Image (cartoon, rainbow, N blue to C red; front, side):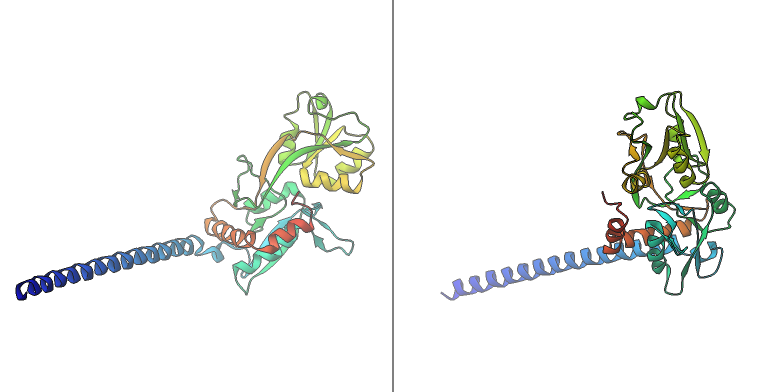
Length: 282
């Protein structure tokens, strides 16, 4: 019995030692995994901080985000009856600035759409927020998209124009420097006229000066909603695209900061509510 007890004691001790070793290995592995995850998170945070470091040095004015906007494009941007700026882009800009820091403010500068890119390129303003869609030919830096859209054709309701084929050889108008102008030129045989003010083009459409005006889908829908007896939209879009914020090429830290702000903003209820308010969630 003594020999058996001794053997049992020895086996039990060995099992306990192995168990403790196993626990130690498991704890070490868990600790290593946790340390690795923490290090990865720290690296990601550091990388994000490095990407946005120095964006302040790329601004036109200290503690100010100067934004060019063309207020002739509801529901993105337009003038309210009291003369103030309103629209999705305006509300978005006012929300985005909080992610730059508590001591930052936003300053909107109204100008015609076709001059905004030049103002951005020359450093007169920091950003352009005016329903801009990605176009590789534009010599600016683009943010991540914050909306999707399409270029469509607004026509008079009784025009008989319902398809893209119906537009062949017709007279079309689009805003100067917009992707709408590019899209209009893809219509076979169409005569394309450009103007700086989208609202002026719409008034000309009412008089029959053009067969159609090419606009961002939400803008065209806005005119249909407010003039349902006069306008309709051609069924098929000419172009599907993403809406972005533009900045000067080379201002990488500023663009990274804008993308960081957009990601934070788009994860909030404020973003969803803004789309609903301006009927951009359809």
